Length: 311
Image (cartoon, rainbow, N blue to C red; front, side, top):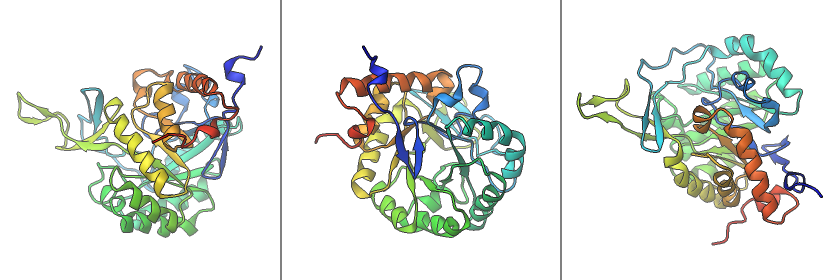
């Protein structure tokens, strides 16, 4: 008799990429992948998304950068990174090998201006043949000169896509701000995006009531983890209704049932984020639990459950 895990085909196609299962990792919570090899074969996963890189290195924000809050974490890392060239030099060999095992490699491009996004994408195109797709982070609330401002309106988000669309042959996935997702999703679709990731962290504050100062180095920062999960599920559903692009659901996924909510709301794939920081074996466990759930639904293919939420 077949086990539950062999009864359901878990393969999906996201942003033109064939994935052996829907499990991805959220940028910034998974390093460059190799850090997790000591816990399980990363090739178990359908895809990984590497930490965002700019064309040239960024130092990031001063410490403290993270703090635990109720059912979540709050962070203001500031996208510290070695630049695309440094990233490829350090991790290209590992990522090339991982890609040969049929795990998709999604790299993330960041920038403060359109020119910086263009430069990052062009360097990836030139230096990172192992990359299967590029995720554009137009939404990080910690980038005061761009990011949220550029990705927070349909016009701003679409402008980034249009600026880089002809600079790469790779699929473009847009990591969306947690605002006005329906209208912005339609604008990104029209601009030439191949897929959407949502949501990014939600801006918030954490105050030390004894010092009367922020618990971090900056007054505001991004909240992620279980506390934002149901907000993210709602936004994925709104984007699913608004456009035809494939979606990757992100936000507080700690269990297979959390992942299943995103699938039912319309996501083709899901990204495990903060859970990686709590339990480094979260991603394969969530895959196992999601597969068991899919089998319990009596389907032969996970795609039968995408958008199957009943109002």
